[in-house]
Length: 397
Image 1 (tube, rainbow, N blue to C red):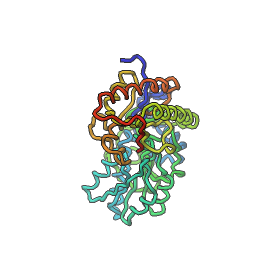
Image 2 (image 1 turned 45 degrees about the horizontal axis):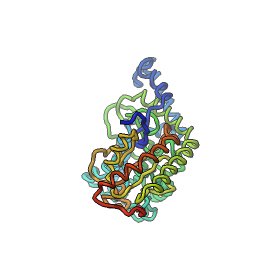
Image 3 (image 1 turned 90 degrees about the horizontal axis):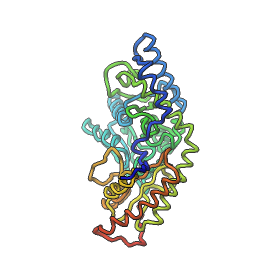
Image 4 (image 1 turned 60 degrees about the horizontal axis):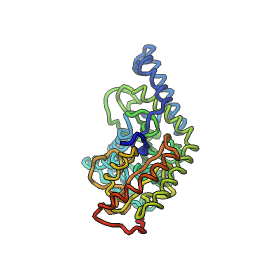
């Protein structure tokens, strides 16, 4: 195994920012109070949560009361989809949900779960680059549509959706619009007014914060049924004692990510493009998955014909390069990525694709290392592959 580690899996999770850890530590030890307690330690904990809520509200451009702290991205997504859909159903305002074919499974499984309660689900197709067409959304809207959920940026291929445009369509139709923005923080603007969203989900560990804490923005007036019952925390929308250190960490990490965003996004785009261009130029029969321009700054998802992605990952790991064959939430699955299949790739091409996701610790020397290491690995695997790609062919998703 290599002593050198090049971490190119930031879409799965990011390392905790040391300054975020510093901000969190006092709430594990010096200030251990429960925010619901009325004594001074409880009041200190409550103040920390209130301060964190204010920090996040400034970044999202919303009111503090519109924010709900949760246990992570999947909980935020489930609360948004089930909470709004069931509330709208109870009010007689529809049993129809719209989402896209490339959503994270947290969205797709939550929406499918609601079918047993009488909901109908429409899954919008995407084009070959992973983009939802606005005309498809308009055509899918019905008088009984209760909710639309389309992700801001895809976790596998990095494609960034025209969220403001899709949100405007939903607003004109009077339908609540949710976006899974888990991959967007620190890379894309999060102003909820500019995005035309009614609900937005985040999780801290995607932007150098702690695992186990997330956030849901819910526009004032949007109906929402709680999905965790118990105490009166989070304005009775999400019961459970607040994770004070995690909430402090989320707000600190988001504040730092937003401050760094313009410079870091530009830096990562340059590194990403060097990686994409270098691999496409040196590995025959390779291709890029997702939109070339409308993609996350740090995302490079590429396919290599006649190569099994998992085998390539093992060789990369031996060289100290950490990458992914798709969503970390489906690692170990032998099924091809539903995202890549939705682009029109066949199962073999989908299984021949890898995701490289860059972050703070990645620099030019790391890209050079990958560009030198990966082409011989692909050649090695092709030498024993059952097919032989034309060396001058390049597949296009």
